[in-house]
Length: 83
Image (cartoon, rainbow, N blue to C red; front, top):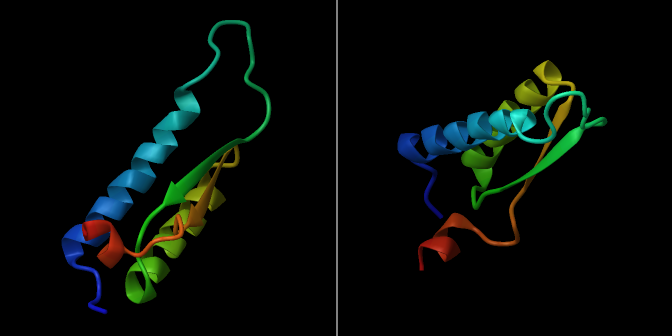
């Protein structure tokens, strides 16, 4: 299996960053959403790519207490998704 390209890693980082904007989605005005928002991040990375995404998820979760990103593979690898 080939290692992920820089473009793939940047794309994963962009997806993770976009997940952070989901915290702004929800109730507005006097209504409080209450609780932590959980985002399931599916990706097809393994090895180095997975390690990079896991590190980004940890960094994001450490700095955004009201949003919890859970990194999962979605049950498929990037090679399978391309087919």
